Image 1 (tube, rainbow, N blue to C red):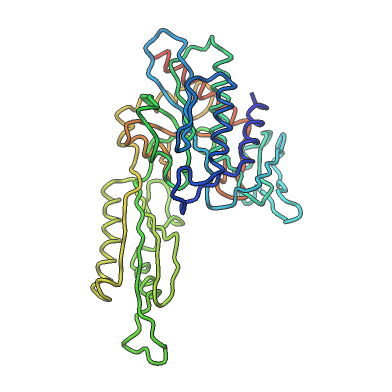
Image 2 (cartoon, one colour; image 1 turned 30 degrees about the vertical axis):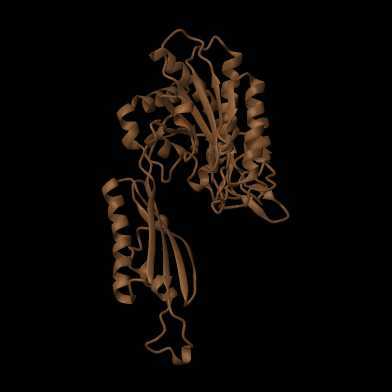
Length: 410
């Protein structure tokens, strides 16, 4: 199983599947189509049934039941795209056998290292087989590790018919990293009662709470006058933008928050005297606090409109996803079964809120309750990303154990 996972994963990460928020197509990039088509052929090769890919790049397949019991249909999902934060082109994965706990040289020529002094969690992986980057790209474990684990688990179940399970559906989706993953996902066609995204991080992660999320695009219009004669005439949009940011609580930003603490995050700012654009994301696990954050942003905008003119500050604010806890808690047994599966394998579940969102955030509100399970990776979205193959094997085993528990509970 270990070598199979390595082979699958390293082949997937070599396909450039970074999504593109500026694209209006689905998938947003051609590379996602490339990997989707590869996965379709692999699903057929291992013996999956009802293998399809629709016009939007959503891959689905079925593992038929091998039990007479009335078992709920469950699904496993992973996304094919990788993050936009750092390049995913020409990924060159490096395999570190029996990691000794010392600094890993990612790229000798560029003096790029993966050091326990910078990343203390590396010490947890002594003796593991690790897969790293070569220091010039991200790795793509988010979420190609999930794809490899699901594919390997399905092949194992097909090859071991003595393991009883109900009907299982799998799906590989596009554009999760730009928030569009479930937008064109056909829940009815998928046909599962419950699902799990294999999209978490280190060993044991099990998540069923996410942020409530919104975005705010703010456009500020100024008036540029020659500075020598600008008195009482110039309106500097860049300074208004600075004023707006200064009115937000400085300690309620990502770099100062953790756990259940929400934040305002200015992720983009560009402009000059004449025009400035700001892009915020707003996050909070609590629904009432989430609304208060949006009200705060709107209130500051209204205040600046009064001060500089109603047409000078424009805002477009919209919700992007909600806390999936609201939809999963009524069926908490699906979280409990995942926890039980981990414990049977000697894995201590680490149940914690996601400080972000997964496809499950939106899918849960579309009628498909979908918690999130670990894949084994660390330091996602950058050059220091790595993953433990040993823990990828364990994630695969969790899938296998979980489908058995559903059958046994039926």
